[in-house]
Length: 461
Image (spheres, one colour):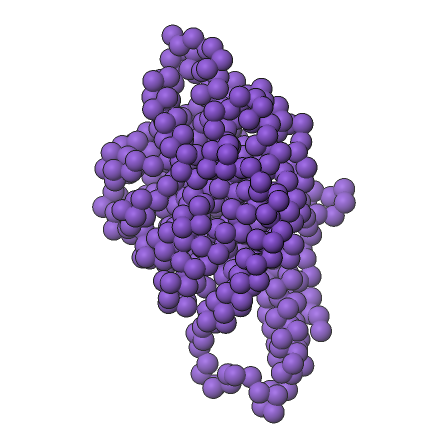
């Protein structure tokens, strides 16, 4: 039985990445770093006020870690895929770039590489060293509710170019969601997707982008909360399955980099009522399965519970301390490569303003160029494009209700709720829909209809 001394507790802390609430350093995250020695933090959209404040938060978190005796700086992660899932993008923070599907529509790998490098520059200036991107899922199922436009398509070249771009700017990339969340109509935020495909089918359809990324030495890979019973023999989520994380990813595909789970608060794992094992138990199972880092983004009680249950699992021998230490070497190696050590944090605030202004100016220009090139005509049977005022009198624009469309978008529910009401507001129009209306109004009178099920909705001029 392993002895749970301070060195062991420090080791265990390195195997988690946790989120927190607010745009200042909270007491919860202070405790996680200084008492539980948590070695990695994820920033969510809710944490981002602007780029300067983000750097202030990051440097404050790093100071806490250094004063608490952490051997290496924290890895600071974020969901920055570009496009739909862009936690750092806002008018006061990072540049909004086109997402994966739009980038693939451009058909230029160099632009994808440039976008990721430019985005990586902004993240690095704000102290962020780990992005949970690119999405390597092949969006095979047209009814997929969570991947969609987040996917580059069926080949790995674009995901590989994105990974290379981030790494060139000193930010660790992370391919997700292994072994592929593209062929399901269920969102793992809400329930466990069960994919009844053989290993041969997985190799043929889902794995090629991951194989390309592994060949290109991607620093990290995120495992998915999806069940593959024809591979594992049961409905254990891939993220908690040793047959997937260790046997398939490390054994068959020879991946030697860092493995992190998707957030364990997703209901595919956390909801006992829906067949999950619970968030804290999920963390233990993920580490037993061979994950290096377990992710819990939102709930402090679950975060503390997960660490303490891991203490118990190490003490009982359920988690091998020897294996955990070997896993810790992978975490240390990624930190050494991407954080720059404690000396690398010195003076960042002093040089931030000038560097940010120059990078931001170039990136806004790159974004505009990329969006312009990404516009693709799918069908124009009446030869109406480009729209000319002389030919067009009235334009009908139909857009769907946007709130709660994609649970992967951080904060969507909280930002769209009525005070005192737990149900999300069906917003009148998303900002990008309104902007499109403004563009169309220069060509003619616009009737904008926001529709829900059955095309019912309210029109607005």
